[in-house]
Length: 135
Image 1 (cartoon, rainbow, N blue to C red):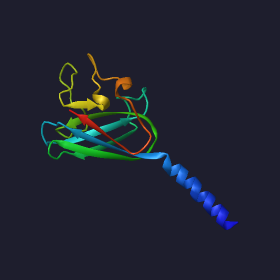
Image 2: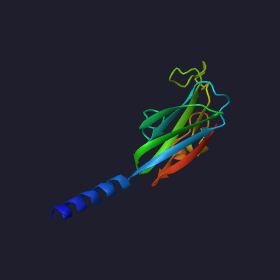
Image 3: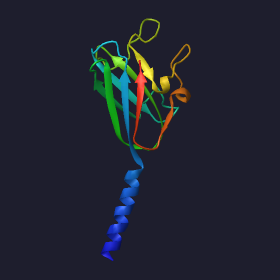
Image 4: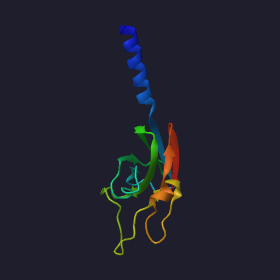
């Protein structure tokens, strides 16, 4: 009886862990190695570019940066990233509100007269994955 309970528990645990994935984000094309890259992961259209689901920072080496989000539930996500050259923790903007630091989004989504949309930046993750974002 103890063996059956143990096997059942192990089976349930393996199913639960199988639903979590690892997402690696490789950012390239940065203009220099100054500062850090901030990567925001979003899990809904309502929070996109407002409240990150998870976020990570990375040093820049050879004009590239890599971050890995571990233990993510499989699902739909979008990414926005920016080059925080002065390491002040925010995307700097000029007097007109236009970003003065480099930024990009997943799927190379671009906005027209504004930021990219969640619809253009979203992607599905169902297994361990790697995406590349080019500045």
